[in-house]
Image (cartoon, rainbow, N blue to C red; front, side, top):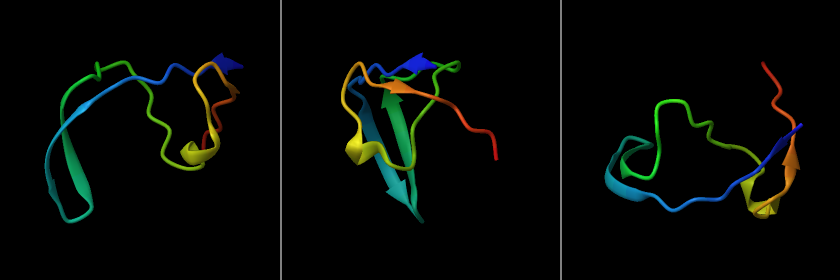
Length: 50
């Protein structure tokens, strides 16, 4: 289990369903893409590989 840490990002250009992230992420960060609207800072999560 991992503990979720919500952070702030700075978005850049959005095109064709993709968004450029200018600040706030590093190369080893993981990003939640599904179900994120139900999560709160500090939530315990489990990574599922598909």
